[in-house]
Image (cartoon, rainbow, N blue to C red; front, side, top):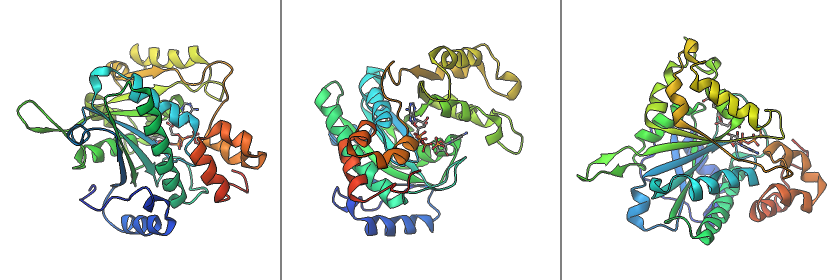
Length: 300
Ligand SMILES: Nc1ncnc2c1ncn2[C@@H]1O[C@H](COP(=O)(O)OP(=O)(O)OP(=O)(O)O)[C@@H](O)[C@H]1O
Ligand SMILES: NC(=O)c1ccc[n+]([C@@H]2O[C@H](COP(=O)(O)O)[C@@H](O)[C@H]2O)c1
């Protein structure tokens, strides 16, 4: 079940940790699987209500980083111009497919997501290369992409209107890093049969835009490109995957040679190293929140 109509938070309310906490408690005890807490829009209302493409960045946002910023702005500014009007959903996963919960508390992460969204909207608007953008900040109980995609599709907040005025589910483009593509296509997440067949609907209707993640544990550009080539050659077919899925996946550039390696883990571990180091990894507003609220003082 997805989000019914409810009052959205303002910018100030998204800095009120008690208010967010109350909303999270209500969400946790409800049957809802997705809830949108805040919407920021620079788009004309009809455009933002009827997006052609919904980008989804699903993450633990612990905290949001400059890598997340790059992933979002790259999609909003450079993914197919015909995909406009575009809308972006920053989705906090309260249940992770792999990881146990860690600091910071979810209310802090949502506050940081809201600040991050404000900074991103400003950056995209300043570029002037995007027809108008709307960004939502939301929360989900679903851990796997296949479940998130289904629930988002059923959520009344997202549909487009076709030429005859009929409502159509919007195309979703899931924004992930290379490590997460590998996990999306790992049969261990699909019990009881442990095949990739449950992903059919996701690839039929939606796309995945994958940012290369080099300089970390996942190999260089060639290794990551070769992985997708193997999908295209049909190497997932014995696991129930389809070679056509490769056409629904786009691998795009992440960190450039010589640029800082960024991850949320690195932020959590380096928050003791001072403001200058912190600000290399996170946006100004998020950095200020981390410092003012003394987050991650005990490291990761
Ligand atoms: N530096 C990066 N380059 C490419 N993709 C990234 C990068 N950082 C995060 N992502 C992607 O963004 C999505 C959400 O990020 P996530 O919250 O897992 O960040 P993370 O930095 O990997 O977190 P953590 O360090 O806490 O494990 C994932 O699909 C992840 O692959
Ligand atoms: N097969 C899948 O759908 C799958 C596998 C691993 C992680 N995830 C999700 O990806 C998101 C990002 O995960 P990490 O924070 O572990 O990088 C989380 O929402 C997590 O639950 C999905």
